Image (cartoon, rainbow, N blue to C red):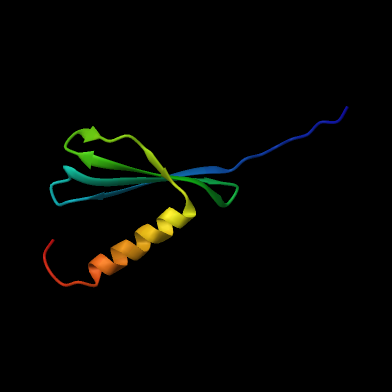
Length: 78
């Protein structure tokens, strides 16, 4: 019988993107396990309420990045 030790380095990041009054926005949570992204979840914030968590894969995050880049390429007040 051998002793096997497993050490996991888990880092949880929580990023909040909110408007000026901090009553509406988006919460992005990332779990990093042993230096690799294990999960990314997004939820909407509206007042004191938060929506259900939506888990995104890498392809969805890349598409989100492209969509935001396209939106920001257009001048104007949102």
